[in-house]
Image (tube, rainbow, N blue to C red):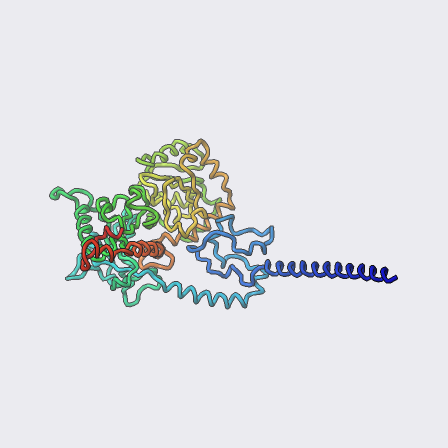
Length: 511
């Protein structure tokens, strides 16, 4: 009897321990389930409240895609969502329920944005002789003045195709304006007089204008004025203590026309160049890591109050310009033979003469897609004419570099086609015809959102081309400083071992 009692007691104990183990395990599993469920819920902070700058946005999911219904129409597809304004998106019930939180968050973000906007590029600008800048516009200096009084009269820049490479003119005006008693509110760069405060040193040489106006030989001169001014510029810069100190690495020079600064570039290459592309530069002189690509100033009229749509633009594909080009421009003539007889395609020779700009404006404003084909160089102002016309650019230029592409996704509003593919029979037409109304409309809307990034004007305005270029330069400054700091690691040792304690090391020792 005693043995049976002990046996029964053992069975009960084992059953009790088993039940306790099962219960504990179930509770443990349930607790982890609720923990995981709570952490997977959408964050209480609405990601749509984050600043959605059309410039600084980057691709990717905002983290709230799970809250959208399957039938909800996205503002755009894939990586094309980065330029969508949050203000234009419809609010969900969840967003409405958090309106109070949004107001508070927006206020704090607005303050943060204001603080961020105060961080501007500090630029030291040489007071070069007027012969290097506004003197090239026939401006006459009075007395010892170097710069025109822009409060009373701004020297005019020549029109026509000269305007497309006028970048140095607008940047110089913007720096001068930053010193006015009441400077423009939109400022991404200011001029500083103390070079120790400067982030970069600007060289105000109107190199593109100099090439356009003064690259022909005067009968009474052995050298053109363009060459003479380049020689004088090199002599001046390389004699400056600022250039010697850095080897020119912290200098900024504009050479937007592909043929501008043609002689001096091989001597001034350590500087950061502002260029239209790298088509006529070897990579050791100019490259995307060191230099800045700036847009052309478009020469056709902007499409103001554009109320057109897919159906009201009768031309499917538009190109007008020089067809027979050298270098990489052979693609143009090959495409001409492929497309000239296609329905709804305008592919014709054109120039700025005989109302050429007016005709191009009308043609682009009435076209759905505009061809941008490599010519003598990888880029042309035709791309920026298309953007101003809200005509979706079709870029056929394998070596092209684009302005602000480190912060701007051009696939949002441009079609890219490799030259080899474009020259295949029917490839280009099939591709363009496959883009239907909804997709075209999204890209057309993006063009209207980004067009201001390519507008040059004085005074400069927030988010226009002048501000965007300065911001692009500012993004190069950390890399410039890194190189300068690394190069100076052993400068003291070099001075002591090679030239003595009181000597100044050669710039070659820095690089």
